Length: 491
Image (cartoon, rainbow, N blue to C red; front, side, top):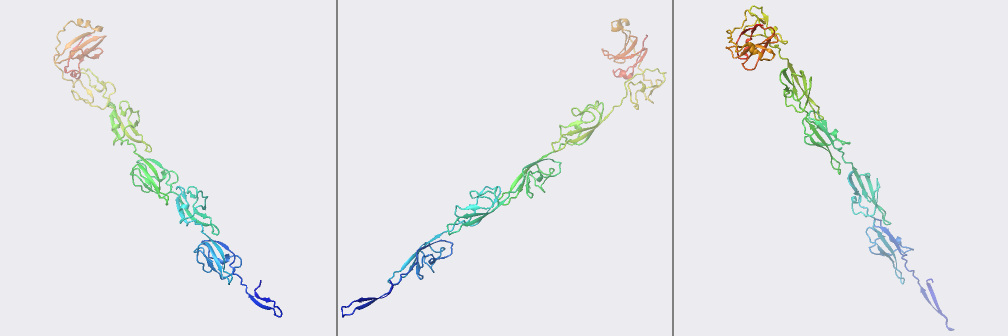
């Protein structure tokens, strides 16, 4: 019905007229707060109008109430609480006030944490990317980056460096949130692989670096038993042992090391050259003893003749240069020293001879009486001075002893000789001035003269057709009997 003046008429009983009265009707419209609404916000969203969330055609001018004070009809999710916010529109009496509500939901955005970074060595164990995020990141996110991420781990041995993104899914209207971890992967230093070198102490300096295996990085440092200069090992001045090459790593890669084992061998010592001069009649001599210095034993000899036992035998071996070789321990070479051997031939005076001369004989050559092949150029001496190597019996007769006294034979000659083998006939002549006994015997058509000391020893002097025998003084003297005697015998 419409508002307005409503007239009430009461019919009168005639002649009473009808009577009327009016009622003025005013109809007020109740207030319209709209219909309930709802809004879901992210706590990071901008403030939103609550009024705009009401349904219908809500009357403006109402008031808001709720969990937080509402200013300007706005809901600020960053500062206000979620809940039911009521919109009240005052009614004109007798219309009551009317209300409508807006249910506000405020969602918290996901927290991926704050950006992080990690530097790894390619030899490090796998590390957690999540642990590198700052803040309090929500779990359950996903990772993406240069390499596929498994279980949130970064393995520097198999994965690439770069920026890895962690994404946490937001609850609408909150968007997904991301944070990053920047991964740096450093390559560890490469010192190479262990090596070894064996040097002779006389070798030139060698590069330690060149002994390392693999592909070692340059620029490292060396240390070991001796100070290393320029990466070189000088076997003449430095000690053997283990030398360590250190290459500094870029953090977090540690320093890396490799070693070179150095062996330094001492070269063999054959001594210094020597020389020896021997007579071919000398006893064997040690070649080793002729070397100078302090030669190592155990070497070998070679030369013009085969060397046995390190001895030089001048009677059977040749003169010349004999070389002593001592075997070196690799890489030291064999070393040698020499002994120069000179072998002199002894002089040859010939063999003893004898000559029987008459004082009226011409001078004779003493040299011609020597046996063998005597060397010329020698000198003579004897009872008389010798001139020109000649013996002159007229002037050089040796002094004679008084004629020997020949006693009567002790038995007839034939009786004495009959018992001897071969039928030898002999005279026994005794020289009373000497201690020797002279034997004269004949056998087989040859006369023999000998001398002895009165015992069985007998030194024969043989001559084919011996009639007169002059016993050489020197021969008798050797038997301590300086007698000169003459024996005459008939053939």
